[in-house]
Structure formats: structure tokens, C-alpha cells
Image 1 (spheres, rainbow, N blue to C red):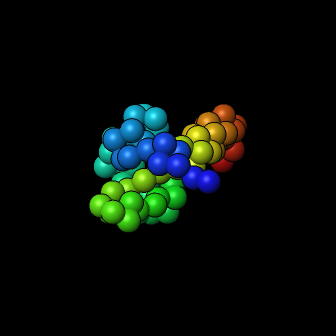
Image 2: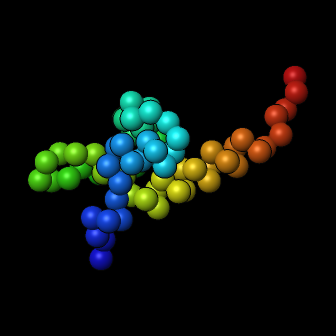
Length: 69
């Protein structure tokens, strides 16, 4: 069963990812991070596991060697 504590609001998601709240909103709008809405108030909710997965993807892409042209 999913609990509210399994989710982070935009401000906390931004802190976890190390970016601004506007960046988190943009990434959510662009589909880079899955976003859920609280049915009571419409706030954006981000699953902590999704944020951790996104961070791992960023770390993997940052450590890949770049191809030279």
C-alpha cells in the first residue's frame, strides 16, 4: 500500500535532485519524471523511488565516456 510519506512535494523533490522547483516542474511536464497529483488539493507529488531512479539515470549518463567526432 502506498503512503503519503512515499511521496515528495515539489520543493522537497527539488532539494533531493539538487535543482530548482521550476526545473522539477518542467521535467515533470516534459515527462522526464513521473508526477502524480494529490486529488484533494492538486499538488504535484513525486514518488521518492522515481526520484532515486532518475538520479541513478543521470549519474549513469554523466559517467559514460563521450564519443569524439
